Length: 234
Image 1 (cartoon, rainbow, N blue to C red):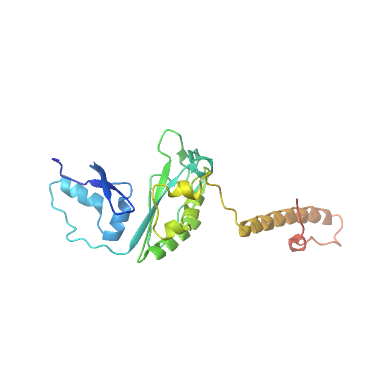
Image 2 (cartoon, rainbow, N blue to C red):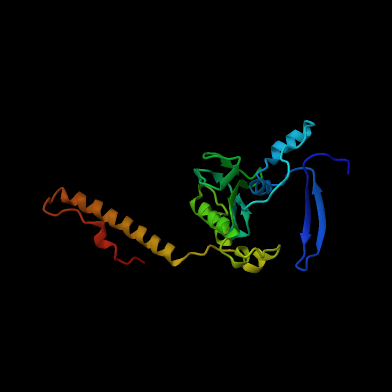
């Protein structure tokens, strides 16, 4: 192959150790941030140096730590991963040590069906795989996107699956984990929080009505919302 520049070679690895060549692409991959984080090499910079006829500047490579990348998509994971549209009313990505975000969108942008639904790539780095997974979980928990449906909750749940934790995933993992399709796992703590919010909202409305009535009868003070937190609602 008469080619000089950045390239990626793809293989399939079988459980018995056999591997099969798939293709060679004359470009960097979507997952190139993972390579950059574990090697400390700016692949785009090196690609430009090669194109300009300059030698690579990275020298001998050394792998350090562990990196994980997920793709944040505007799609409905609970509906066969169909693309979603909408205006990004809120786009608040996580920050912190070992957290990287590659994105081409910002708050206020419109997500349309005319382009690829990928909104961002979230990448983390840590000294070990377990620490990297913990960092990814925290980053996904802090990622807030409002205005369109995303796969954040699916990615967060995927990080807790034993196959992912143990690094034993393959091309059939998702189909085996959710043979009937994925649906959000609503924990009891989330249900309890929702009930508390509903109770507070109801109590707050009752307080406003009582406060309005107290203008005519100043002897009765407003009702505290905490007095109705134990009420049950259908």
